[in-house]
Image (cartoon, rainbow, N blue to C red; front, top):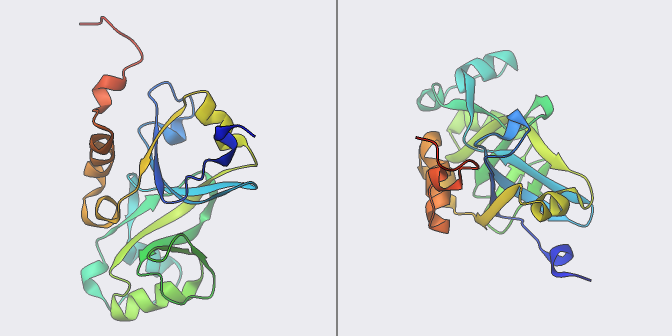
Length: 189
């Protein structure tokens, strides 16, 4: 068994390399929520869409009493199930349909978390996405082998405390590089 097969990128960031052909992932920062022999699942955390929580709550007929959340952006989480909402959050809490990322962070797709958000503003640390990014068995390992992604340990601070446009540069900084250094073409003025 080679080392690539044993890598587990749960709670890591994936940074799309500039040569990434898929426009969904161009300059994307993906937070990997689950990675195992069956495949991987993550959400893009730096791509707000033209929808805020107030609008989302209206669409799903939920009351948003926590007005401080009304103007928070909803994110494009990835090209899979774009009609479904996913909440990446800390603390993990107890929800009907939740994927436990680690002791701290969960990804929840059940409506009960939105009800809680609307009523109490909890969990405070959260990113709401529509859709997610998914890979079949061995697919992400294959893409890593082709240098399609850079990987770096994820940090809750980057996820929950930085504005979306600062998340990718902050993750790159953890690697000690900037996006411009990744350029696929050299020598252009």
